[in-house]
Length: 120
Image 1 (tube, rainbow, N blue to C red):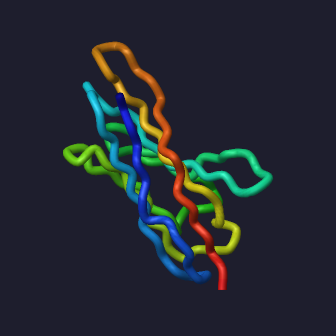
Image 2: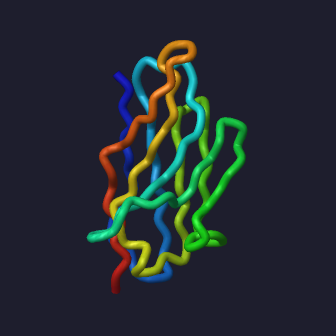
């Protein structure tokens, strides 16, 4: 059974920083793309950032220059460093991983989400 567990969310003032982490555990053959998504109240879930197995990254326009996604393959962990946070960044943040559980069998797995609140 594959599990993703996020941590690092919380309450921060505008302009502040947070670092989210997401650890993948379970029986895993390989991990491909890993990403962070967020969902604000009343809105659809949206992509924040994604990183490929080779380290290529892509960001939503709203977070470019403020957020940085990275991964540690040995630790099966993806990170999201969030700087210069704004109130509009407030949302539940979810991580997602493309996991090859056995050769050629690949599924998307999601974490349970972690709340990020940006408010003074």
